[in-house]
Amino acid sequence: MPQLPLSLLLCLWCLGRHTPGLLASLGMESVRYGLYLRPSPAMCRDQAAIHALLERQYGLRAAGHFMPHATIKGFFRSDAAPERIADVCAAVLADQRPFTVFNNGVVGFGESGIALRIQRLPSGKMNAALQTLHEAVFAALLPLVHPHCTFTPREWAGPRFDAHLTLAMADIPGRLFAEVLGFLRELEPIGPESFCADTLQLFACTSDVWDGRW
View (tube, helix red, strand yellow):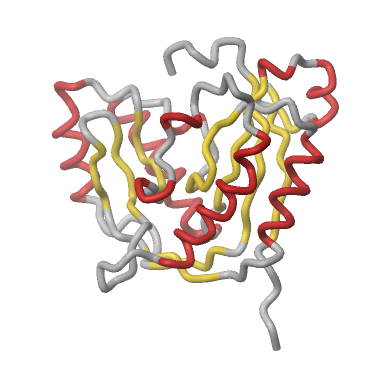
């Protein structure tokens, strides 16, 4: 029996509330879209638990502002209607099938972020299905990206794509980075060893200060 294609959920996440009608009253310049792989419920639970623990232990809040996710196409500005963006995503996913994602463990990104890398197979090779999904989505959405989008030109895309589940980002004090990284590594394994990639979420997020500090 053939597998069903990857499913797509449209989540219009406006000002912290799921209120699709609100987009109609906002200027397009305040909205940014993103397509994200939703981890399994078990992985979501464990990632969210780490966010809560890091807030309580170290006062870190930035990563916990967002839902558990792995970015497939990051924030982008677009003048296209949400329904048009959703249709483009759905068309890409119709040709994709669920696949297994593996937990590669805790990694540091410079001294600004800490995540669970999910880019590779247990053998160390790139997860070709995950890379293919990213490249297909990126290519399909690129024509809809506003020419003045500030995120897309500096996005980790194509050969630079490195899928991960963020545990901490942006607000880790430099003097505490090694401490937080070591703390998280002592908690390993964090989350399941693997999960099925079968659901993606298209989010519309709003902010008045997209170029401001996180």
